[in-house]
Length: 156
Image (cartoon, rainbow, N blue to C red; front, side, top):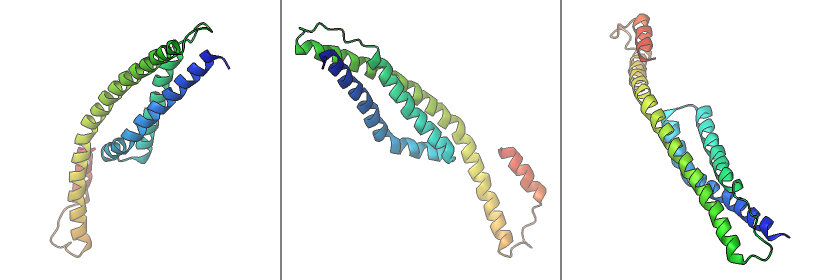
């Protein structure tokens, strides 16, 4: 088999392995952050899958940009250095993507966190009032349904 092809295949394997390892390391904490912020399972799945997909695409774009056009009488270290150039390009693409994704998630958390807190406060208030009403304390609670509707509009 051609040594150029072997070196390129090794580069592709490394380019698949590194994003997979990075995703496995970050998946649990990213899933926890997204579940706290988004509170929608489909949104969490979307952001995790898009993170993995773009990690793979960033790594592969860096790896495919390297051409192994070494002469057949080249020494082994020339193939190693050419492979290292490809791995470096892959890492550079992944670091740029992770930095952009980090900014995106930070903006997402910053914008949605306030709304989630406001909704959770109003939901806790409504839950306590409804619990009082359902347990027989309805004669001491005199809040109309118009109040609940108005309160819900303010938080949405």
